[in-house]
Length: 297
Image (tube, rainbow, N blue to C red; front, side):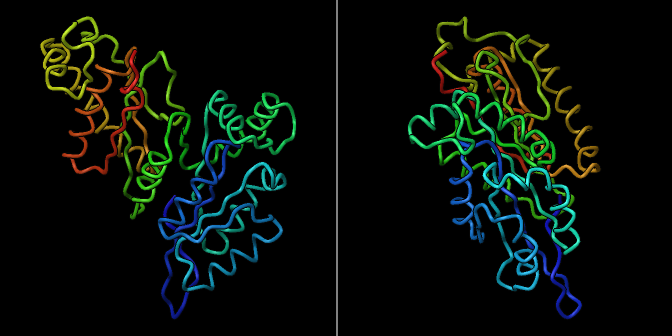
C-alpha cells in the first residue's frame, strides 16, 4: 500500500504514514512500537475498536500527526472480525494503512513467555493458546503488507528491519530484502521467493574454508571455480530483474528473496551477497541479511 493521503487543507493533500502493527503474542509488538516511537511516530497500543473512527478523524484533522503506528492484537478480539470494515473506514477518510504482522516460531514464543513470566492473553495452556491465536490471526496475516519473522532477531535487528520497512517513500518504489538461510533451521517465514542453492559446490567439505562464511573471497572463488555457478548467478539475476516490474505493478511494496543452502553459512551467503550487490547496482533499494551464518553448523 502507498503512503496515506488525507486531511485536505486549502486544496492541498497532507500525506501521512499510518501503520497497524499486529501479530502473534510474544513476537515483539511492544518492542516494535517502541522502535516506531524512536523513528518519530505517534504510537497507540490496543486502541479499542469503538474509538478507531474518532482517532482516525483526529489524525486527518491534525497537522502534527504525520506518522502514526497503531498496535492491535488478540486482546482487542472484536477487531479481528471487523478488520475489513476497519480498513474500509480508514480508506474512506483518506487513510491508507499498512499492516505490519510480526511472527515467530512456537519455540521462540514459548521461550519469551517463559523468560518474562507473562501470561498469554488467551489465558489457556501456553501451547494451546499459541495454536488458537495462530488460527484466529490467519485472516489478519493474509491482509498484511509485510510479515517479519522475529524468531532469531535481536532488538537491534528488529529495529533495523523496521527501519528498512520505513524507507519506502514513493508508491512505485519497492524495498527488496535478500536473506540467506540454512534449510536445517527452517524456511524464513516472510520469504516471497525462495531459491535452493544446494546444487553448488559445498565449501563446507574443504578444511581451509569450513570455518569461514560466504562473505570471504576465498569461499566465493571456490564456488565460482564451477562454470555452472557463474551461469546460474547471471541467469538468476536476470530472472529476478524480469519479475520485479510485475510485483510493482501488483502494488507490492516489499519483496523478500530468500536463498538457502544446508547450513546457511557458505553457498547461500555468497549468492545472497552477490545478488544483493547486483540488484543494488541496478538501482534497487536493497537490504541484505544472513540469518544463520553465525551458527557453528
